Image (tube, rainbow, N blue to C red; front, side, top):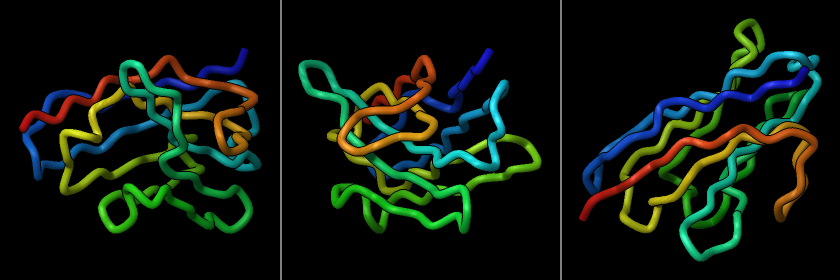
Length: 119
């Protein structure tokens, strides 16, 4: 059974930082592209960042470029999303996804973790 479990969300002030983790089990993690998506109330789920399986190449949504970084540790089956200079518009539920395709398709999804940025 495939599981993706996100952690690290919480409440932070504008300008603060958080690091999200996505721990995977039940799949050959090192051969999967992993992505982070987010969904704010009343909005569609949107792509945030992704990391490739082959060369750990990364891609980011324009809205987070220069503020967020993504990394993976295949020895721990975990992907991290480091979020800096957070803004109120970053408030959303953040989901990790395995074998994702933009705009919002994936083979597997986590249950999500809430990130709230106060102004």
